[in-house]
Length: 356
Ligand code: COI
Image (cartoon, rainbow, N blue to C red; front, side):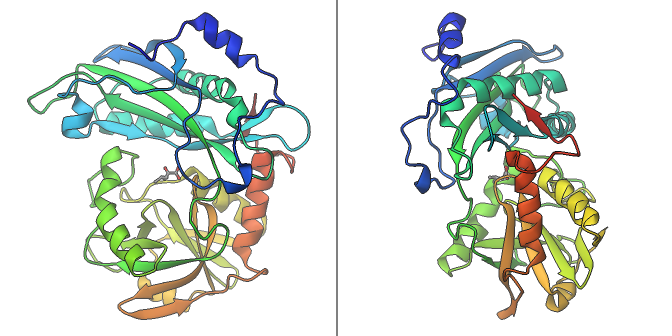
């Protein structure tokens, strides 16, 4: 295919100097696709194992119109970030093994073969190194890495595809929300649901994301930043926003919806739970109701793309609840602590970062 490039050319290109930067206005990064130089591709057949992955020039891929992913949404994605180290050369990737493990759990749910953890991490490292001139300067953003796993083989009747493609691409990003690091305003959606018990809410299947678009668009039209979903059974327990997990704080207790098959167990969610406990907060993973929200001192969202976003207000049935998101907000402390580790400013005592 036209996007293929010889290994030799790629090897030459990836030796670029660490100091070399792509021609980007780093102060204007948002969370938008900026095409970079390379992507990693590895394929395998059903009942087989992935092998022989390689870097290719970034570009369009060829798919059969009857590919499993196009017809039956047999696909997963992941998201992780690479940062340029603040002091000295090198780059840090945040917890890639966790994404690899999550993809393995998701691939089992979606009847797909999965790359091994080593293969996944190798592909991510290769993609980051090949695109290193696109990693923003320290403090300006990160390289967002997007691994995909899809049923690429043709299939007409409903069944697992015959061939699978694992693809990793990357793009430099800044803040996720247009508010930047400013507090966001959420609205509770209680007419459509993101996930149902026994469904796929806990895995990162591509089909979890487009169904939220309608509610998200309607909320944005009304001036809200994003939508917060409730559980589909009782219609009263918080689940997650369209692209991130949610936390509330009351005094010294931080609570987040427990993972019971309908929310994504975010890697940032898990990291923030650990950091908050290290700071001395009690962190509960439990059912968190809308009533709990009305009494909370503080609310914040977490996600790879979002990082830690303080919530200014949540609107529910026309009533607006306001939260502390000033300089003393705990979410700001948690954000700093997490990003200091991600950028190599603070010592990584937990072994979360992978240096390349
Ligand atoms: C991420 O935070 O990495 C995600 O996958 C959410 C996505 C909708 C941007």
